[in-house]
Length: 313
Ligand SMILES: C[S@@+](CC[C@H](N)C(=O)[O-])C[C@H]1O[C@@H](n2cnc3c(N)ncnc32)[C@H](O)[C@@H]1O
Image (cartoon, rainbow, N blue to C red; front, side, top):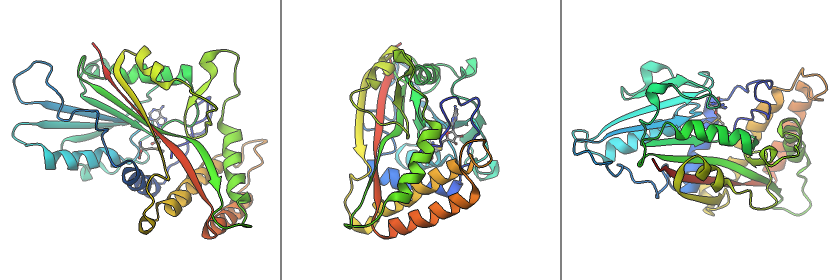
């Protein structure tokens, strides 16, 4: 799900995402969750008092290929009246490498580079009705995550703007046929986890609270991070990737192969890193073995954590 930017993101290499993998992940996720925008979020927004046409502004942080934003643009153009609602959609990402060519974008969609760990430009602050973030955290500590949430919450219109944050946690691997191996899938996941999860420091701010590589033993109180950033009406849902059971959708197998490709991309970033133990040959071997395990029914689950909150003032 998430591109694995390590705990010390300043020193870890940026992983090149495969755009087709991100787009497939979007299809699987949207199918699993059943929404692009959480139903608690009113779209079009309740007016903050103005009487004119709503000028709906939406941002997607860590937008990747902008697939979520483009899907939202399509949905809104089908459900809102163009004469009464103007929608502006902006995607931000630390890297432009997965952006589609600008000439392919609708006129109301624009993409920019920005690192969410840094405050957004003043002109953007307080101007968005909805800001969404999806699959950007690999293993964020409470302190790092709170900094990003605070920067992003500042983009929201006071009183009416909503933040929606979706990230995966709690990876687990399962057999569906007795006696089959899941060793190669395990080796891949463990390789990524040991390289990218921060060592637990002594204080509460060092606790990992969100991200693909985290496993939570108990309640890590993510909603408090939202409230501390000035958000109200905070609500967290946790969906399992196993939520839908329709075999014809093949979500289980497609999702498992998709995440393995994601992890392999992360491991490729470790080839040549001293002491990592990862070589191109080892990656080719585990990839082949892991895909065979999936052929034999091995699959994963993840918790899809979706947290929403509205900016109070
Ligand atoms: C796994 S991709 C998800 C893309 C998209 N959100 C989606 O769901 O399809 C993670 C994206 O987050 C971006 N990203 C990672 N860290 C970021 C940061 N600190 N600020 C902004 N974008 C970031 C990456 O460059 C990458 O495009």
